[in-house]
Amino acid sequence: MAEEFVYVNADTGEQVNPGNANNSYVPTGTSYKADKADLLEKIKPDLIVEVIKHKLMGEELNIKTQKWEPVEALKEYALTRIGAEMISNLMLGVSSQNVSLSSLKDREIKQRLLEISKTAQYMALENWIEFGIKRRTQFYFIHQIVYSNSLVVLKQPEGEGIRKLIAGTITENRVYNQQNEKEGGLKGLFRR
Image 1 (cartoon, rainbow, N blue to C red):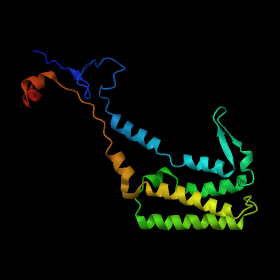
Image 2 (cartoon, rainbow, N blue to C red; image 1 turned 60 degrees about the vertical axis):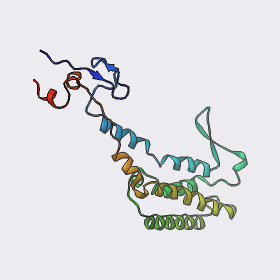
Image 3 (tube, rainbow, N blue to C red; image 1 turned 135 degrees about the vertical axis):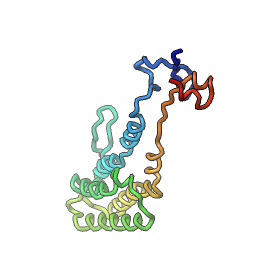
């Protein structure tokens, strides 16, 4: 007597056809790695740095053209291209996928925040003409942007939250053998 196998959707319990190429519940053996890769692909803290760079230059994204355009009202407060690039490059040091997946302690986070913020202030003070700084408030603005973005990015990996999330991502593809369920337990596993 030939054994009869039935493939079942693990979420709904409905029977599925393993020959159907569109069926996402046929075991592939690569789903676990693919899910981890998909999750890693979505962790991109460096994308906000590009937005911040354009905002520092007083630009906004035109939704229709998908191009950054200067805002006339922000002209007096905008940094030059070199200023925005230098500040955003400084933030890239902590706004990376590697940092998001690291295991940082509170003391380490505070030390990095202090150093990054001080460096941003020194850069802005020393290069105020090249950065296009015309007002004292721009120094505070630069400090707050760098501090806030760096704090959020550095706090993400605290307690290994993202690392634990990725480690715990498991997709199960279950194949049920109807015969095993009828006979119960391990008895059906040893049949040929």
